[in-house]
Image (tube, rainbow, N blue to C red; front, side, top):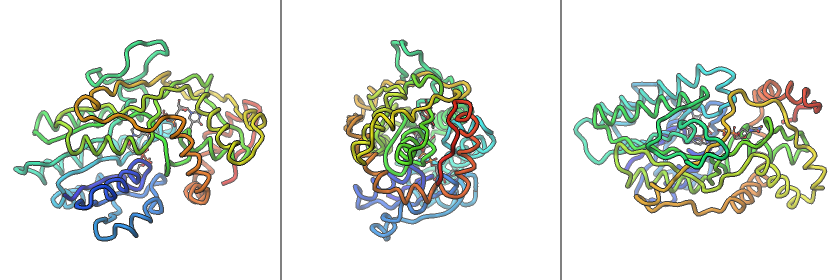
Length: 362
Ligand code: NAD
Ligand code: TYD
């Protein structure tokens, strides 16, 4: 089978491309990626070398109709990861989020409908997020279930929800075999260091302030990326068309607990002084409209497809710390250039207000 993966040079996409090629010797993978700030060819250099005959990279935009139609005519399935993925950036300006996440997804759906007209056995996986459900209270007994109405609350999740609705609409209106994954906060190798886990690891190592938004008691469900990849593949191959599947990590944790664990893990490995590094934790002005809690019921995935997370939270975080400590050169390279300006804009004033100036060197 030829599988088109979009956004394969990003965090989850690059892990997924590697996972697919390594576990399915008969599959061919075409990776369509625009190489925005979040996409790095270097994240797949081993794949280019190890699977040269079954892997092809195409630099391009999911909004490009001619290009996507041509690629989909050759492919039997698509797994659509490409997106603008960072909530904070969407709060700073949402236009690219609508362009890529909504219009890009619409273009891919439309191209798949035209390319696969009359064919059977195809699959279109739209990678959505648990954030489309909105937010839970800390003591809310009901977790997110797939039949919950979508109620996104920030520009990123609103754009993902719009594309989620469009994907469902293409199943109902045209019979396009769309399957949706709604995954929890994912962590692991190759995540761009603007997200909580890799950003904290980099700052702990550098001895920089660890910026925790607000009271730090915001809860996320943490999913190791290889568990996400296994689930995504199961949905691709065995998921029912027209259905959404939550993908959870069964690991709800408040942000402060995640940060403290990362400090312990880094200090243990580098022989750093624990109390000194813990004192870098700095509560800064909160994210506007910060969703208090995401927590997902992933029972449907387990019941229907037999998939549950295999990697325990502490074990997964320890492996992630090891990976980032071994790949500090990767981190430095992907955060060179415009990242420093982003970091200054995002954190500079808030850190100063919190009484700890200073912006990390990259
Ligand atoms: P990422 O930001 O690391 O990677 C996104 C990739 O998409 C990059 O390689 C980028 O170059 C590419 N891209 C962006 N715009 C493009 C365009 N117009 N055309 C082609 N390629 C383009 O994202 P990620 O964290 O790997 O997330 C992947 C998907 O999973 C996204 O759809 C995201 O919404 C979803 N998701 C992520 C998480 C998470 O915790 N990371 C959780 C739930 C859902
Ligand atoms: P993030 O990794 O941006 O993922 P998402 O917003 O999709 O959940 O953030 C995870 C949580 O960590 C979220 O509650 C915001 C918080 N956070 C901080 O407290 N400090 C930071 O520097 C970042 C990036 C996130």
